[in-house]
Length: 182
Image (cartoon, rainbow, N blue to C red; front, side, top):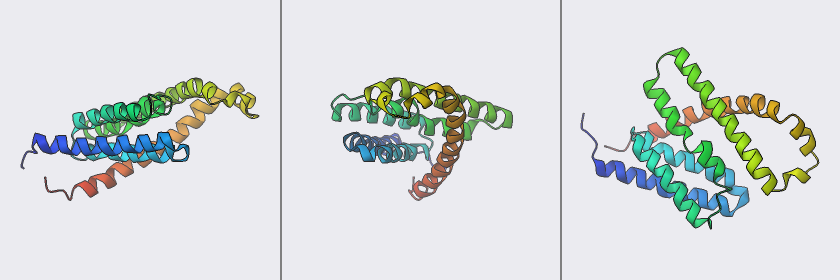
């Protein structure tokens, strides 16, 4: 098997960084497209992972966050959920797929990712809710009273579906990038 060159790894990671930064910037400027920007950035960061370029994907994530931070006028609030969880999650999934074979260890790794997701939701709630005026909403007292149940039960259920979907999306990205000859 032919070893991939460093320039190919750098080029693939740079393209992923550029697409992820553009998607995060687009999502930060147009509020309706924020979720789509996050999703497109996650897909872009999966591209280097399809060739097992772990450092390339991590550096593409850091570069995309820095570029989006600069292009969005130093607004870190819209990038916070991506920086806390969504950007690193595909990398952890790929490491889990390639290096953890034991079912018990996979379950423990899933629980660790679920707790991390729930903590990222709590950070987003406590940081972003006061900024965006959520406390004035009519449903706020009901949610504030049951916040930890909603986050830890509902958030874990949502995370299980999200984690399964990201594994399937990584498989589709792998099949698409497999056509590249290197």
